[in-house]
Length: 457
Ligand SMILES: [Fe+2]
Image (cartoon, rainbow, N blue to C red):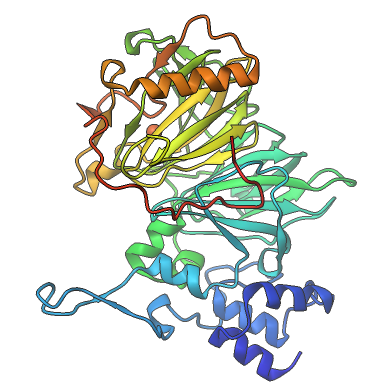
């Protein structure tokens, strides 16, 4: 590989894919430390093959706004002193990063989604850039059989879910070390800024994790990869290294458990939510002292669907079992204005911020899903937590007709259609009635799906 190749890599003349192909065909993905590639990667965000401890001096990484932008965005001339440079650090990172990634609203199966060589993490993976999200992201990690990923510590909140296979993760250093063993359906927290390393326990098969993190938000605030990857601070209130850190669990509210590890969310006890109607059953988890990420699992009955709604916070949903579809549209849920996203176990869906969306169970079992939302975080940002819902009596009759057609197609009896309230409808959220179907613009057709699978139906 030539010097020109590396120059072109960082001036964007070589695509991420071309770079990765070149690296993998050259079979130099592992012994990269000390090579120009490793130095280049180190400058981009992390060092391959080394435990980065806060005391170690490290090559300076350029902050996001130090990388020249050929196509900057400015505010209108009457705003912000006239032509303020508008910065979007996460969007900028998406453009300049060499991390393998896909962008869209959904992936049909996170367990089989294509992953790519990712030298910095010493594994394979793919970054899930959900359209419009600037607080939360998803990342699929695939650890080769019997191997470990690079150790990392990050100044952002992160929860991990076992997708495929089994493994364990070591957290902390010295006396503050703890280990968690995970399998398919497991949920565990990676406490803020604690050094951790994921291992695949199976000598024959790859293992996969799905991480959901607040990396985008931390980048949006500070614009600094150095801060995110190299912060020297112990959040002792979030991680004390106690031997029972990943085994203790306590019911702290009617449907809230304080815990850092859930062995299998598919089998977790769910608590009825009768006062919310519709036979909804949920459990919420308070994990690792997190102030943004709010994970929960919920289930809805056979032949039921959630009412259409929108909310001013981000949500990432992983189906644990069952099957169905969701509709999502900026201006409404009519067939002409919305995109249909089919899902089954392993699907990940993230409706874009403040888009209308609605979930339908067309399987012959209850559908259980894991959802990550931001809790009351928007309130702390000064954003009113105004969840708008299209109530049953305001719903366009075509929504129910469409659902019944889909049930018929799937061969599921539609004896009685039940509505359920939304997965993210927690106590404390203000409610107002949605405007129903008063949309004026057809959607602009920019819908795309992450990954290879079309979600037609
Ligand atoms: Fe929602």
